[in-house]
Image 1 (cartoon, rainbow, N blue to C red):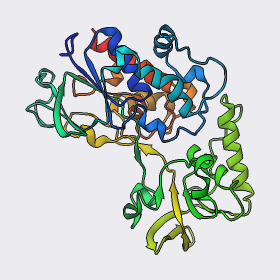
Image 2 (tube, rainbow, N blue to C red):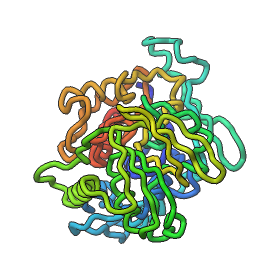
Image 3 (cartoon, helix red, strand yellow):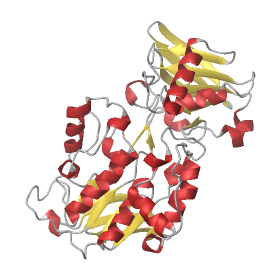
Length: 399
């Protein structure tokens, strides 16, 4: 590998994994730059800053972060409480970003939109070693416009920022893309601060995971005038409820969602075994066509809350030789290792651990996908795994 102590490392994303990678780069003496598309660090986390995590502080802060913050006089809570995303930002991420070993390396409001190799296309120099001798080219978009920067190694820590479509088969329903960003929301609503935007409206809620569970629990508690049509692809979703769940908050949420589904209160209507067939704007409202095993049904709502999960942006490295899993879209070596220990759908996140440095390598030398994006469509990623991945990558690049 061509990475050495003089190699500039490009870290894409200033979230929990990107910031930990920045600390690791500083510890190992590598020159590095952290690119964050948002105007402030942890841009993705800020979208759910009001949401409480299932995991306690001890699982939400890496050992490297704790050491760095303690040395700077910013100890991190160690109690068994589960922080919100906002508390993590305030007590961990922002103090980390202010440390001198990181602050001067941060590029905020700078989005890396594509990565390639100088002088090479994706299909060229397959397995020849020539690619390792060429620097990466990063197309960067910031306040000054678009320009190209180069790096010797790239750590993609951009996370899962791209919402899944709500149409049947995972593709957008007819009319969906025209409504995105206008009448379709993809974030858990902050009902404490924005209750007036949601109270008394008619909503279509799509999804059965933890985000949808959090949203429906809040929406049905607003007032009797709020109407929620909850679309569940399965007839009898489990809502992630398991016996003896080691995460009490996760257990409480799943059981609350199961109770709501079993006995819907006034204002909540369930559409089980249904998919979104089509959407159409109807004045200020949306006309929704749903389909289930017995036929189609049309309803009119004011807004759509699409909480069907997110995936990483794989367009970023389309000109690189990245071997992806055909099922999860994660890097193939890691996906195969995860499949061998946890099956195709994953298991409990607390049982996860890193699968070894070799599983993080790609045919593209010096390019690594870390964090939740490395798990592709799997849902059992744990931040602790991402920090283990950072250690393993720096063992590789420092060798």
